[in-house]
Amino acid sequence: MFGTAIRCIARKPKPPMKPIELNTPPEQTQTITRAIFDIVKEHGPLTISETWDHVKEVGLRGLTSKRHMKIMLRWMRERQKLRLICNHVGAQKQFLYTTWFTKHNFRQKPKPGSDSSQPKSP
Image (cartoon, rainbow, N blue to C red; front, side, top):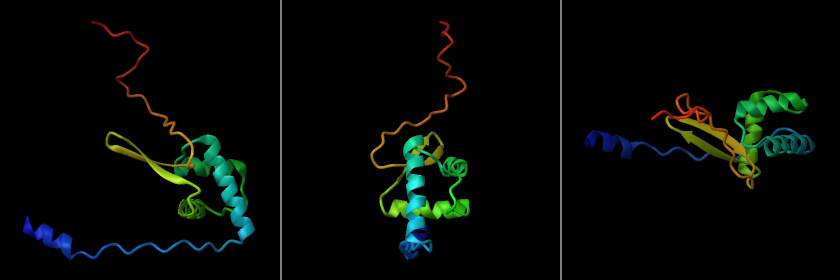
């Protein structure tokens, strides 16, 4: 018991992350962030993979990869253009990106045993 406490106290804290510095030109950064913001605003809270699917449909030229989009999403979070929320259902967590002033409309997956269309028997 004391060994665990000593290990926790002896550990160094995680260093703070540096702010992201983008290498893209400001005009291109503005175009990409505007497109991502519009996608998130229109389609509601989205996961990273859902956002990437919508970006591919739009055909945004500035984004080179999903990794680049994730960096842009993190940069937008630092600038408080988007926020990250957690949809925690049971043992599963789902992290969703949303704009600051939208209401949460989580698409809950119904449980297999709870079908409301069937009447309950006594």
